[in-house]
Length: 134
Image 1 (cartoon, helix red, strand yellow):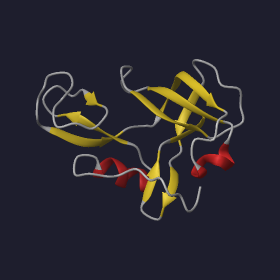
Image 2 (image 1 turned 180 degrees about the vertical axis):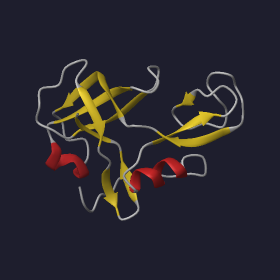
Image 3 (image 1 turned 90 degrees about the vertical axis):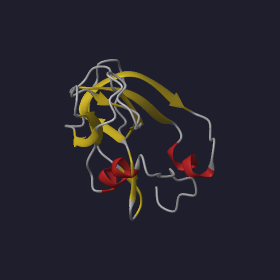
Image 4 (image 1 turned 30 degrees about the vertical axis):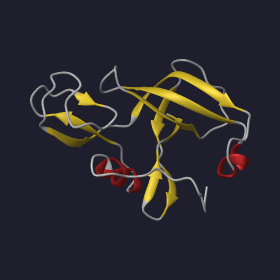
């Protein structure tokens, strides 16, 4: 997926997430008060509303919870991918965290399919979440 026009926009609150992906790692915010992880990035804990959040690496493994197969070209950046599958993955570390991403495989997708994160480079310093069968 080289030379993409549509790229995620990083901001102060999500920059650590995007930087970690560019290095091949998945990190999530974790509350220092209650130890719950929070997704998507935000200034307060979604569990206890605490404001002391830090970024922690996660295994990046889980199972497919839901998915959609896209057959329509919605932008020129994605034309060479059609059809492609977007999966919603329930992380092993915390079952109420669901992370979306493209399934980079031709395998038949089903609920419960075991996957692991395989960040997909978009530019020299930017990557996005993608998943492959575990």
